[in-house]
Length: 224
Image (cartoon, rainbow, N blue to C red; front, side, top):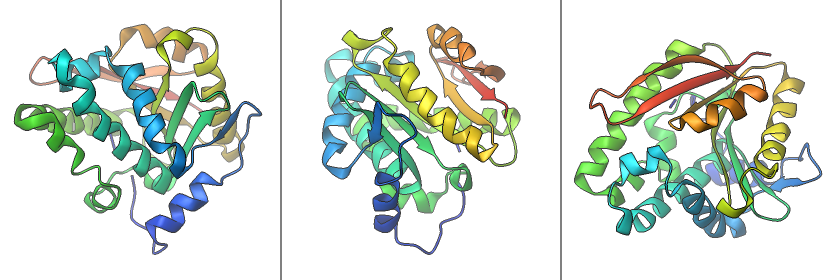
């Protein structure tokens, strides 16, 4: 999982700009600071049983508590360095990293608080998080080079999954990428997601199993 060099504009200004960015779909709206806590809880519910979260936080009883700071930091990161969006019904969210930031730096992680989020996973969870980040970075470099949009995460309320919510969120981001003439990149650790993304033009560009054998990760690219 990789975003670029830091611009001189203050992170707070970038967040305000990202939150007010025009939407490309009538059913999708910018995710504001006021939406952040609610959206972190939404994403935790959406990913509670996802292979990635089971890997990072194997103890089901404490998974929600450990995962919430992770999703909150991810939202802050994308509001500062990308575009964060919600459906109007607030039953789904998509977090994108802008093309100029798809190489994640220590500076951007510090500014958004992502660097501190793994602490909530505990010592063993921090080790697994670092393994996942390192392997994701390796796959990212194998899969694509040059400017591209990075879909960091897309999540839908469990009772609204498979009803078209995710497709609307994804379509809004793809429309933006098409307007830029740029490809899109994502990673998933859930094989059930592969057909969904393929229907939207993504293909597997690299994949493999983490060195500790705990998780299979697929990198997918949608060419411009």
